[in-house]
Each structure stands twice: as C-alpha cells, then as structure tokens.
Amino acid sequence: MPCNPTSVRWARSSVIIAKGQSATVFGHLVDSQSSRDLAGFHVALFARTSTAKPYVQIAALTTSANGRVSQVVTPNYTTHLLWLYAGSSVHAAATSPVTTVTIGIPPTQLTITNGLTITKGESTTVFGHLVNAQTNVDLAGLTVELFARTSSSDPWTKLKTLITSSAGRVSQVVTPNYSTELQWRFAGSPTQASAVSPTITVTVN
Image (tube, rainbow, N blue to C red; front, side, top):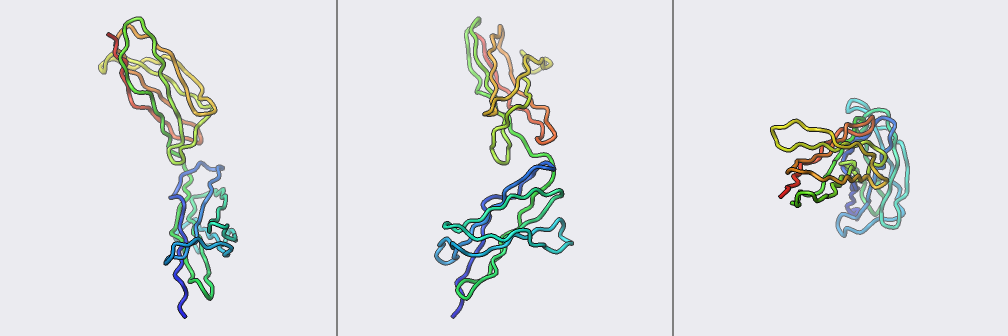
C-alpha cells in the first residue's frame, strides 16, 4: 500500500541577522492529502554554509501536538537550513524548502505620524516607531533624531535627539510658526541598518 504524501513547511522565509545574534527556524509537518498536522514524528534539521558543501545534521526533534518544531540557531556565517523527515511505513519522506540565515545588518523600518493642519501658535506631537523590518520587533534603547525644514528647497535642521522606549517609540512636541516638513532618522547600529521615516508636513494656518 503506498505511503501518504507528506510535506514539511517553513513558518518563515529567509532572514538577515548580525553576527552573534540568533534566529529561530520553524518547521511544520503535515499530511499533504488531508492537511492534517502530524504529531510525535521525528524530524531533523540540517545546515550547510555554502552550496558546495554537504548538509550536516545539527538538531533532531519531535513534532508537537500541532505538527510543529523549532530550533534556535546562532551561525557565524551565512547558513542554508532545511528540515528532513525520513518517512515511515505510513507517511512518505519529506524535505522542506531551503531557508537561508544571512549574516549581515538586518533592515530597519522607521515610521512617523501622519501630517496635519494646525493654527499658528498651536502645538502638536510628532510620533515615531522603530522596528526590525523583518520581524516587526520593537527596537528599544536606540538613538533617533527628528529633522525639520520649512520647504523642500531648504536644508534639514536637527530638532531633537531621542532614545526609543521599550516599545521602540519616540515622540516630540513641536510648535512651528510656519508650515514645516518633519522626518525621523536612525543612523544605524552594529545590529540594525539605518532608516529614514517618510516625510510629513505640519501645515500652519
């Protein structure tokens, strides 16, 4: 009797991390015909640092009640990873797609509040939010700067330097006398790439 077809799926795509950081790789073992989670099955995680090298097993795990496995990896070099299920008398062998953990500087996203219109003499608060663009994790304790200019032909002027909160957020009260363009900037760090927020306009009537 033929074995039921099986598949191993990734829960995330390839990722970039800084050297010394860790990443968690996830797998999901399912019966391909019924999409049923396969619990209590043995799977192995294999890795290699280049396509010219053979894969080496780095972990052996048993799938959870919902057919899932996960493993933390801390590679020193860019590494290609895949899950392997060896198969059984009931379920066919299966190999996941290859995912790559690249050693580099992870991308960063910096957002800013929407533009608005105020009356001259009024104040408004400008908010920013700094996150890892891959994982959407808040980036706390990092320095961001608020820049302003009164027209697109003027140079930018730094208004304020702030440190992101535990939620990756910053805010600054501004009281412009003229319509003003505003922008947050993050210069980057050893573990996160630099980022610039979109530019907004606070229009003063």
